[in-house]
Structures are given as C-alpha cells and as structure tokens.
Image: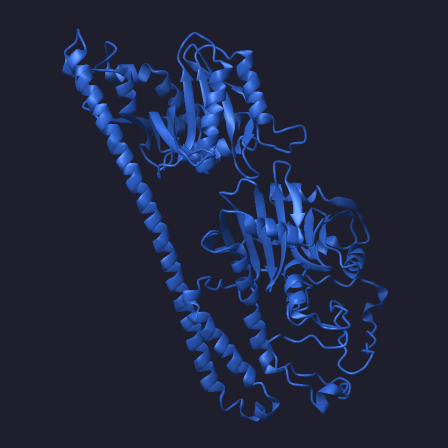
Length: 636
C-alpha cells in the first residue's frame, strides 16, 4: 500500500489480532470500523463489513496473527480504501461558484459513491466528504498539527473554506469473510427461520429502529452517520432506513401498502427457491451509478429526464400490471437506451463546457505572461542600447553586460537519441552514467547574435561555460541524479529526484511572480530557474559567486521567495543556495528552522520546508570547491 496510507493507519489505536476468520467474524459482530493487518495483507472494515483487501487476499487472514487498528472515525477506512483502490476524477469546482453544501446535496440525491477532496488552494488543511450510495461522512485534517475533525464540525469548516474541490468516483468491493474450516463442514447447516412476525428481516446489518426518522433528522443523519453496508454492497437509503420490523427495500420500489400475500410468512415447500423480481436488478444497477450529475441548475434537464424515466419504471411495478410486462419489454428497452444516450450526451456537453472554461482561463494567463515578457524585452533593449553608447574599449556593438548575457540566455536539456540513455532511464537503473553523459547535451539559446560578442573581455561562450550558473546546471542535471541513486536517497529526496527527470530548460537570472498574503503580486528574482516542458518552475537557485560566506539573510530571502512560489506553483520541488565559499552558522540555523517542522513532526522527506499537509519543497545547500559542487544539506 501507499506509504502515506500506512503511516496514517499506524497512528490509530491498535491491539493484537489472532484467531483468523473467527476473530474477523467477532469484529463484524461488533460493527468494527478500521483496518486489520496479517501476513502482509490489509483488510479495511466499515461497520463490521469488509470494504477492501490490499497487498494480499482475504484468505491470508485465516489462522494467522496480526494487528488490529481501530479508526477514530468510520469515514477513514472507507476513504482510505477508495484512495488506495484509485478512482476517476469526474469534475473540479470552485467553492465561490458552486458551494460544497450544494454539491453534497446533489451527490447525495444521485446516490453517488466516491469522495470529494477540498485541498487545492486551501492553506488551513485538507477536507474530505466520502459517499457510499448517497450516504456521506466528513473528515478533515486541520492546521500544522493535522488535527482530525469529523462530523458536522468538519463539514461546516469545509463549507466555509474557499478553494477548489475535486469529485472522485470510486468503487467499493464488499469482502465476504470465509467460514472457519471445521469438522462440521460436511454436515448440513440447520435452516434459520426468522422470528418476530411477518416481514421481519434476517439481514445482520439491518438497523434497529422503533420509528422512522423525520425528514430533518434523516438529512442530518445521511451526512454524518456511517452508512451501514448490506450484502449487495449498498447502504441503507437516507430517506428510508431499514428497521427490524420491515424488510430492506430499494427506495425506488413501490410505496403501496403490502397485500395479504406479502404480509404472510413464506409458506412454500422446503427446497423451493424464491425468484428475485426482475425490477430488483434494474434498481440495483441504478443505485450503483457513479456518474457525476450537473451542479448547474441551468443544465438539469438531463437529470430531470432520467428521474422521469425512473418514475415511469416505478409506476410499471404495480402488481396488477405484471402480466403485461413481457409485451412492453421491447418498448421499455428502447426507452432505456434513449435515456442512457441522452444522459451520456448531456454529460459529454458538460465536460466540453468545463474544458472550454479552463482553456479560457489559461488563455487569459498566457496573455498576461506575454505582456509581461514584452515589457521586459523592451527594458532589455533600452539597456542594450545604453551599453552600446557608453561602453569604452571594445567596439560598442560587440560588447554586452553579464546581466544581459544571462537574462537573454536559456539552457536546454537535449539528447542525441532518446533511445540511447536518458535521465529517466538512469533513474530507473536502465542506463549507466557514461551512456547518459555521452547522449545528453546542454544547449544554449540567446536572444542576440553571439558572433563577435564579448562579455567582460571574454568571448560569450567562454564567459557562459566558466560561469557558476552554467556549471551548476550541468552538475544538477547529471551528477546530482547519480549521487542520489548511489547514496540510496531516492525516497528522502523523492520530489527533487522526480523533478530532475522532468527538466527541459534552465532560465538564467529570471523572474517568477506570485501573490503575497494581502493578494498583491510580487516579483521574485532567482539566478537559476529550471522549468519543465510546459514552463512550470521545478527548481530555483541563488548563487553567491564571491569569497565571502553565505549569510543568514541570504537563506532567509531564499526561503521567503521560494515559499511564495511554491504556494502558487504545485510543481516547485526544491530551492538551492549555492556558494563559492562556505555557509555562516546563521545560514545553517535559518535552514534548520525552516525545515525542522517542530518536535512532533512525522515528515520523512529530507530538509523539507512544509507549507501544508501535502505541499512543500526541499531546501538544499551546495558548496563549490575547485570547480566541483558538493551537497552539504541534506548530507548524502
């Protein structure tokens, strides 16, 4: 299983597990919610029912020992099981456009199975609403301490947050616990006769209830009460909870009073099998849908059409019309096919409209970036003209400043052949250093003609290759990747390790923009910005190219600027401070303060600046000695 999932589970209250399937059945009888680990396999349980087995099979729990982890809230095993199994993102919504409470009501009314995650652009924590056949529970991890909130408190906090939430459809596998093997297996099992009167349910998961809840009570319970799981893998419907005085029925079944035949106990001869009504399979299929309905009131025509079709099927279930069902089956099938096609077309239209809105937002951002770059280009041209007019010695039109040389230069990571060894191959252990170095090229592109250009009295290419900026990029792209592999630090530096493989180009003396806490845009300059093919910043670095040591103020400025960039860009994985000299004690103290995370931190990533529960970046210190670079923090 995912290491983060295991880490969360092992924080729960635990106790030994022994007794195999008998012990599992005891947990089922106790309506246990949590996880059981045995023989390397994990079993998730909700209200006594298994909802997922990972890293093994249910048979691994027979006659073995292990550990029981009791969940602090029933929502957690169901949520973690869905996340571990993996789901499909159906849609994303902005809370100011579609409030979470509105979306939750819509998903519940459509019997949705999956979960909603509100974490993007949310600094206070991560919020989850998990659904099973429309019934929902809420959990949240709030603050730096990741305090767990559940129930109404968690949902109210989530509903008040501003951010982007994701709707993920996920399946739930109901796991049957095998019978323990015994010498009595060959003997026939005695027939169990339900007691307590006609219509009484023998389902062990049926809830005991004297009276049906009111509509207001049902709404509150639907959101926060753990959904009881039935043998068919469904949960009791919010508006029609099962009771011991009434058999469990689908919410779409006819609500007419039972007939005399239905109110009497089953008196058929022994051995005769009761045939399931044909309408039950339709109802089961309808309740298991994971399609996300439209949350826009103007786009609800498809939902109304589908609800209309369901009402028509309900009316067709009147016992007096069963004899005509076979004659109308063909027409019913055609109607169902047309309804299904209509729903699919409507959902396709909604997906295209969502994609169009996303494209329009991206277009607006690109236009802003274009305008900013145009302004920067005009300033550089003005600076170049000034240098040409005032620089003595070498011919003015052939000499440029170091700042212009860097700011108008980009370095590109290119391969002679992508089939002869790449960084991705090296990370996977499929190519040695020699194959990668001979195949990788660090090419440069300038915004000026380099023919005859000099910088500080040197030819341009000589100046570029001797600069610490160029040498640092060359070291980072190839040497650092192998140092991480050779010292077995792939896990501790995972974000940085993955980012190195995605580097497409390096921008020298570039600028990144981000908003501060007051919403004001701030420009932050870095000596090196390494980007992926889409232009997203992956790694930033500042360089101290002097014999004076790097100070605490340098590290403080780097941490502040990198944190702002990481808040605005999820892709940022690391920030480097490079020095030709050494680091003052104040610089090391600043680094330790930024990456400590407190006495109770559980962070396993090395030298990691944690901004929220899931976001942050590695803070690395590098010393350059005799033309070679050495990573001193974290120490390899």
